[in-house]
Image (cartoon, rainbow, N blue to C red):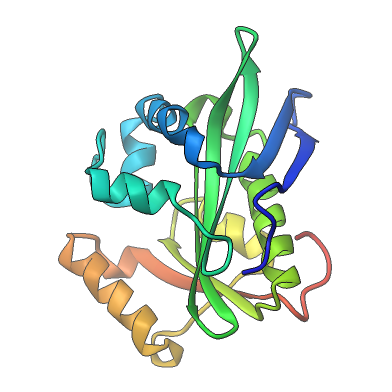
Amino acid sequence: MSAPGSYSVTERLRDGREVEIRALQPDDRDDMLAAVGRTGTQSLQRRFFVVKRGFSEKEIAFFINVDFVNHGALVALAEEDKCKVIIGGGRCIITEPGKAEIAFVVIDDYQGQGLGTLLMRHLALIARKAGLKEVTLTTFRELAFNRHFYASAGFVEIARNDMSERMAGIMAREADWGLDPTKRCAMALRLQTRRGAI
């Protein structure tokens, strides 16, 4: 994934607030952990499949040390009390040539303002520029802000018999973690042919 570590754009949320979307930097560690602390239990459970209030040093290193070759991450920052703070983020991890998995999280106070769409749009732009052909994710089937949200951005559900071995393994692990497989689905966005929202 060839995206500069200096990637930075300014966008506006639906309510008019300005946000900066930029490449994650190593010195974002404390702010990223503070953002996790400001994220509601249900949101964290949807992202990490367990209620996660803390991370091991190994997990923190994985989340912070991105190379923008095989693992890229963007953060969204908004001004609060005259300081910029992380309010969400998204990441893209190459899984095989031309393909990557993506994931997003937005802290509760900023949900419903279009931030997830903005993060997805910029991650897709970086992925396209890097020559990726497809990004995939797993999500909840029935939650309006999950499967339906991704479908409106051009993602299509992957039928179980069409899943790669890796994706089938991810879905199996999710079931092992206690997630009902009938309520989960895998989705893909084909980047090279997609024109429009993202």
